[in-house]
Image 1 (spheres, rainbow, N blue to C red):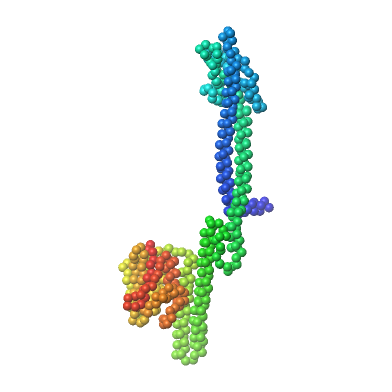
Image 2 (tube, rainbow, N blue to C red):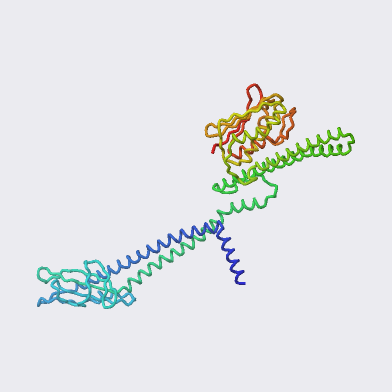
Length: 466
């Protein structure tokens, strides 16, 4: 039972520690408490100085009253009758003991305590120890008529600290009570201010929670304060990107289903024809067509998988050191048989290694699709040239062919998934350039299309060097 209570209490504390309201309140209160602590420390010493000043003024007044009572009789003797008022002015109800001493300039004791400690400076109170108690002492030199050469007498008055400490305590407690009331009022005002200040943020939270799963329309920024409006704009931008990505995913799934439906139906038909055909030649023809369709759908599935992997966030980022020159040479060698079969001249222009940093597998897939597209859409007896170089701290890869090219009005659209130019005779899925763009943008580069000399297409890829 006790363990469950401790666990619940710990969970409650952890939840409160993550609360913005609690954090703001704690910071405000800590600031207030720090300022008040400093004020109380300062007020303590101010109260102490005030109490000492009042005590010193009282001591000085008492010493003057006693000094005024000093006289010289007819025989030249110094005498003093201490007025009761000189001592009663210390009667504040705190049980202070008053001591005094009157001595002549030549050191003769006139009245009072002979062992009373003397301060070092006149008219300035000092703390001394006297008869086992701490006292505040002040001394005053006062001229007396009748003494030779206008002589003076010294009056020293000492009083215990009871009244001084009581005055200091009263002054400090008065300041402390005011500070406590200030903290209490400031806490209430802070809590009310936080409630009102956080109300728009809570309305924003409720507005987001109450939305349906498919509602991605923008939120009004004016529903929150100006400091929180960038957050609302960021949420709106995020929802717009999510909406765009969801639309792209729906289009992708729809197009993929459409692209897969036809080859699968064709495979089913060809398989049925091959199963029913008795003639060996026609059966072999149907089986050949079946293998061709199978290769096409296998390539389509492979491209779909590559495109899915090339999308941002689909796989853990990798940081490989990829040599584009070496990869281009290996890919051209792999496509050499297809190029020879169609009598297409393929060539590579590379002066040396060109190293870029990124996902080596995806960069290789990018080159595969560029070379495959160039060979696929180049007519027989054509040419395909791959050049790899570097300039301005970028790796430059160009793939040039003398095929039909791409009209300038459709060069942006060909990067969309499953988009194919009308009237194209070569077989394809419309995913090659889409894969290229996804890979290049994921590596922080850019891709562009241009016209080749003498007709054809030039694809230029720029990637940052390592």
